[in-house]
Length: 347
Image (cartoon, rainbow, N blue to C red; front, side, top):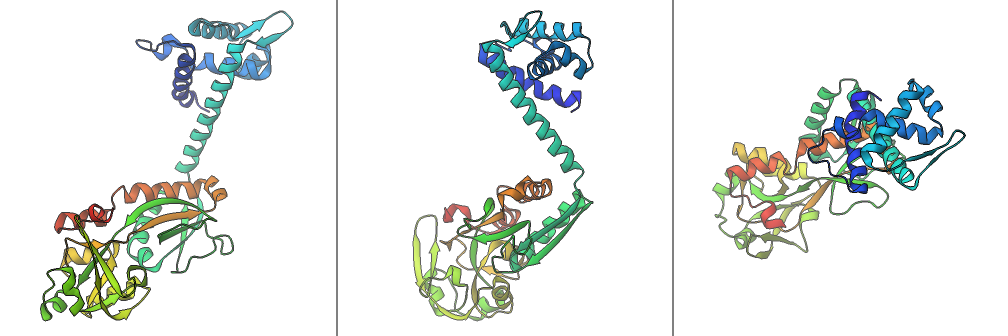
């Protein structure tokens, strides 16, 4: 580990030790309170059980090792080591500080090592995702990830079934679901909201839809996950209405329903990540925009816990979380243009 890297971590170590023994750091610089060398020298003394052995390993003189130890004891105001001509033992305070300091420095080493590997990532990453989200949103995210990590290769398999990650050798599954698979670890990426929408041509040629009940007189394009016993639920900020509908096309594929809606075949219930750009362009128009479906889903990155030790998997999941953000861009854009209640009405 470099001296600069340890120096940042040493500040945390010293703060922990100062808190343990009641010392204040107010007004104290790192230099005046304790140094990186003093902390690392003490840890190596405790590990090796000898000042001379620590001196050899750290390539310092025995007198320099002894001086650093004495200065650390002076700064902390406690005796860390009992020294005789033949033996060296840690005091009670020394044992407490050694356990804390060595653990923190070890964690710091792992953190910096992960950062170094992330900076120089290389290898192959195998992903699986649903057809709709993978086509519309994940592919651009992967493109930005590849721009940041030019030595990484990514394979994306788009499939609406939940694949077995081990049997099919996938590293990460990006899935939209209402519940996660207990066999996998899962990290939330975003909440998926849905809207009711239709093509302007369809809406202009049929009876106006001013309230949820008006949808009963229209042709509907339905997804099984968003339809319950032949009805849609319209939820506003103040109430919720269940409306029986007439489905002329039912499909478990949002892409198929999206295409049918664009062709003017009826009113559809579709996820915002798929239709936001269409609404902004005017290709689709929201139906009863002050309401949204009561049901939401969650976008997860699923993986086996052992896979997360892989720097490539960690870096990709972290990248996707940062790229999508707390509120996905597709929801931000939609909310800015129309009266889209989004998370306000689906909470």
